[in-house]
Image 1 (tube, rainbow, N blue to C red):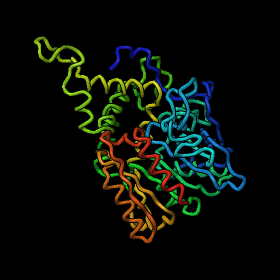
Image 2: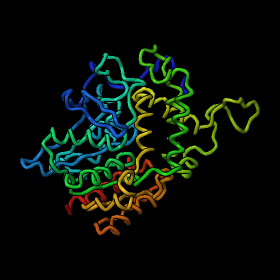
Image 3: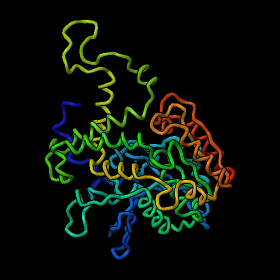
Image 4: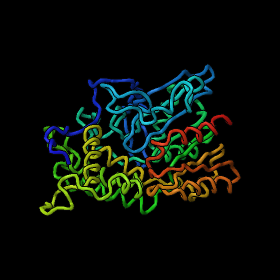
Length: 390
């Protein structure tokens, strides 16, 4: 991990007063609380979102993009003062591109529980104006979709032409089709699953434990910590664990091999904490996330992913899939070890067995789970293959 930890902010969350960038904000009136699956409610909810293109007069050309775990509303556009990184699907969204903004009105919202403008643990609690911190409730993917539905109402979008997303974004896509089958015309779930598997939950549990054991986490109430005194180490370790699952063994081996970043493995005098190149790579990704994300949001969103199960309370997965009545393009990645391609094949198979229409496309890439963010040509071809048919 970087030796410059003293300048790590207590949180990388966006706050009022920070540069807005291309964000827009939709705030629900106090009396319009968002009901949560855990039985509580959230009031004064704000959803940060971005749009590209122009909404048709009949609102028939709207596409919703759903981001992954540590993503946000900035799906396209450069990094600037309001956005620490370029759009996560930059190159896929725009005039003449796969998601053509000459044709479509594209929306991407920061999820409920997030930290880049939408209400989350770093946001001010309406009761006292202090950050929610440990008071923020457990949320589910369904809660996230309910907040997005409120945004759709605000934008005047009754039915999405398509809802598209990868990883956790794909979970939202599936829930849209099950919760609001009359509000979508097609869906494209990518590198995702119908219900989180035991192994996927296990990876998340390791990250949560790393954060919980960081004494600077302070049970979730760390927002007044001085620079360097926030839970940066726990979050960085959690990210490092996750980063291993985002790429394949072959890519790690080819890119890093067994090279040492500190010292020389062929010489004597190796120190215990001399790092391999792959360790330096993981340190880099941990460092980056600490500066742009919130530790509590990482926990809240990760828990929502682990709780994901479209069959919960609906009589099981097969019964839930029967509610999906629109064309489905399920996209897998052959080298994905986090969301193996059998899970995306299962989505297509169950939809077809329920009498619906579904196709399966597999991304040919060695880059593992992150391929849906890397192989834009292949992802773009898959997306346009469905959008042109709906």
